[in-house]
Image 1 (cartoon, rainbow, N blue to C red):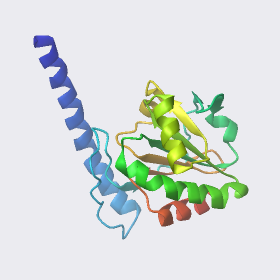
Image 2: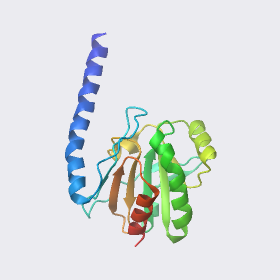
Image 3: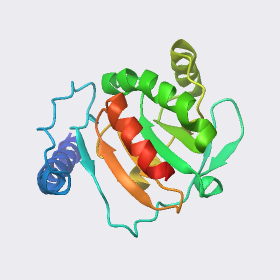
Length: 195
């Protein structure tokens, strides 16, 4: 019982620290992206729900490489796509904002894949059957990767779902989006990384 209480206390401290750490990020976003509206409230589906903010990282920000299993078989290594515009999306089936933005992601993929856009949708710790049912339901055709143990999600310091990383053709992180995106935001950012 004492051990469980200690574990719960540590978890509470970590969550409190994450929330406190996000406040300067939101302020920086307002400075980096002038005129951005206040972040919308995203319904909390689970502990990992994200506010809506966009971050422009330093220009030298290189994404960490990884290899993950692909839904349906095989593996995908991020660096094998360097030279193309890459849209990484961290998501889960239980996340309502993730579900809401997926049809727009599919439309953006259909529109820009011939121009060199790659979307890699990284599912957070769900089994292949659950993910496949979701993909079939929405008719998604971009690659879906399975982060079964959450290692890549932690590597990318994802604090909420959905979170997206936009990587330009030079292999640099152009923008990070925490929270759901509109299709217009996706199109604008994808056009920027395709240049």
